[in-house]
Image 1 (cartoon, rainbow, N blue to C red):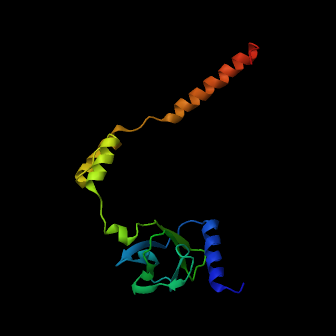
Image 2 (image 1 turned 90 degrees about the vertical axis):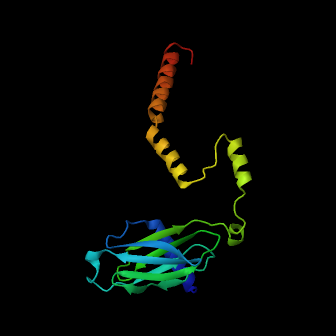
Length: 184
């Protein structure tokens, strides 16, 4: 394969598809700083100092370019690296411990509204009209949202699966009775 970037891109995709569990000795998260994506890897305390670790991250989403970034150690057991600017599209970032090739973690980013639309803001009047049309209301404070969530979780739910199984059993019995009666 001549194109090394394509090879790394395909390697990461195959790694993603092959699955595997989360690594036990470290965790990773994606953060945003000044409109850029950063990856932060934190080793568990019992893993620090056991072996020299090095981590690499690859952005296999976004614009199709898949540069491999080696994360820098910023503190004992903590590694960070800049992935790239935050764009409007989503991305999948693969983090791999280079000394243990099978230890891989995948982080995903959702697509975001482009920055030019963020400056526009929300039209409160339009939101209230949509809420009224749907029989709802606009929540003004985070406390109001917390109250709605508390009421919703307090009610619980009725298991629909039981009723579907009973309805299916009734249909099977009705079909058997009609067959025995010669009407089907």
